Length: 106
Image (cartoon, rainbow, N blue to C red):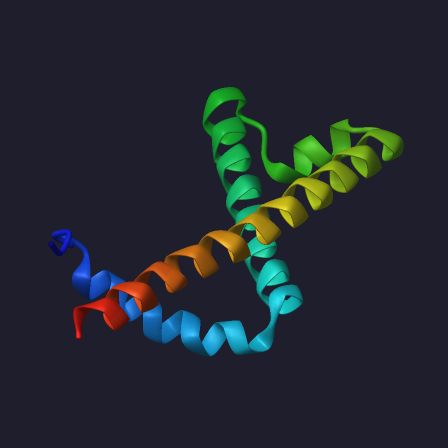
């Protein structure tokens, strides 16, 4: 019995895209996903601070000491590196599930 797949078109698009991306390897894809999540985090915090407290990103950076800024940057890099690696394994898991479904359909 085949499980009904609501996202068949999304899975097909993901399959084609990830098939190309996975050839670049874990490192490149992890960096790309980590940077994507870093930019998203910075954007969300910046917008929240702008509308919540009226602070621009430059105001926030100027208010922090050098050591605090360094610690925050290191923490963000570590967090987003982990996010990049997790994203790789999640994409691989999805890709393998789609491959398994394709193989078992025929």
